[in-house]
Length: 252
Image (cartoon, rainbow, N blue to C red):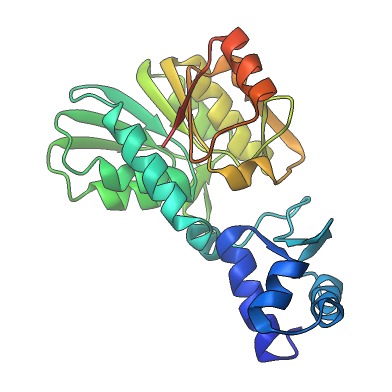
């Protein structure tokens, strides 16, 4: 429960940036750090934030963030990643795109591409790309997940198996420090895993907030990925691992 205007603004800041700090908020509102700590404690107790050292983050755990809130998280970073990713996709290729606000951002950058075959289990992506008359769209079958317009399950995976894609563009909910891609829904994961196997080149798009979150289920390792697009420089040790795996990292 939000008890004052400051807490509402703190929630908005956390959703936008992924994290807020006690010192930064105290300076921003010209109040004591004790006041901010009380605000964060109340927001944490109500389940709206999760405390970390020095501040708080949008909670993850085993429950995914509401889809419309995810759409607003780090919008500028997602747009930069989407632009860079779209530039890496030539005309005249086949592409699988999975569920997520990041892949939807890429779809918007593909509106001027020509002779694309797009296969997707995301109703939103199909709706976006309808405006591109040079794009053939195949929407998979499957169980409709109303919260985000995703189609999931075994039937979806069976249709994906019929294709051999030039590219798969995949989003995920989180990336672990060991390079594992993580998500929440096992029925969604089986579709992404199938697309991985059916693709000549695999692209993962993940803004920096994905490296701060967690999720309970593994999709794959980055070692199975050809190219990772993100929006901030990654730690040297992580980059070294990617180099050993043969995974190119592009910072948009």
